[in-house]
Length: 238
Image (cartoon, rainbow, N blue to C red; front, side):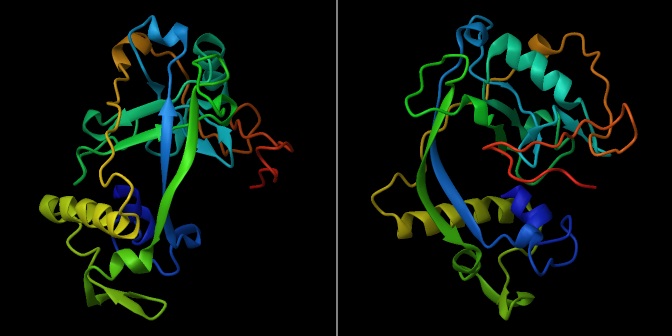
């Protein structure tokens, strides 16, 4: 919900964004099953670090000012632990968002496509599966609180007002769950989610990974690669 509020429907919690970022019009929900690899479980984790992805490519941990640890860290960690699911708790403020938000209990996950399979086993390349669990449109969500303060494509709403209010943020989360439940009454309204147990201290007691701009075109700086395969259909272009 913080991503929707901060980047999709507003311009970083500022002016209203219309059209929405990336022309997003829907929120999709998935039921995800996860199993740690043996290598990860031996360290007492269910999850690894939450890596960022751009155009389907892993660019490592990303921090403010558009700097990331790049594909070299992805390759090293995946070789050691397998294609494990990553996560980060907002209240840890690491790696991002690194500041306090109005959604302190938010969690972000990264799901490496190489680890997706039908029946999760915890093998190196079989760490998660996903099935569709419904979708709602932004219009359906915003109709919960109609108004005249924020308008896009002829639809006006008060749903996204007061972005710095913790109570209002919690209400938005519950409102979204309510819309899903009314639309899909036979599905759990608030599924039990596995706790994000990633431990930064265990993975990064010493963190020597260089942070650089993965989108830079300077030789030896950027790490985005052109890829034509079943996962990434278009090459990266600046």
